[in-house]
Image (cartoon, rainbow, N blue to C red; front, side, top):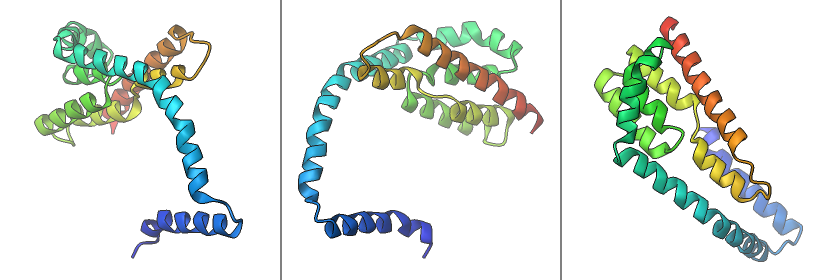
Length: 170
């Protein structure tokens, strides 16, 4: 049996044993943690619901497809294959939507193709910016969203461009 597969259970048993040794009331501590999580979930829910609804509308309305078709020539000029344009546009909004697009691209072009490698790098080097922003800014008092979101989107896009550039040579 592999040691790494035992790491998490051993860590749990170790923490549990240490807590028993220190005479910590584990169930009370657990209940206190859950009690603190409920207000956090309540404050996050409107932001997460808005992001999930907007990302679904972006995909289902056809705006994603139209924007992909419009931006494909610019992406091609930057070294991004036009086939992954929908993935580049959906990834900042939806992790599950981008996973579905990645699966379709890999099924169509293969994992070892240039398009497949670029799609994997694009998927791995970018983040669901709007989801992360919703989670972070839900708990922050100062809600100046514009600059951090723009910086994150630009960083994602630069990562995609650099990733596609390196995929060309690897």
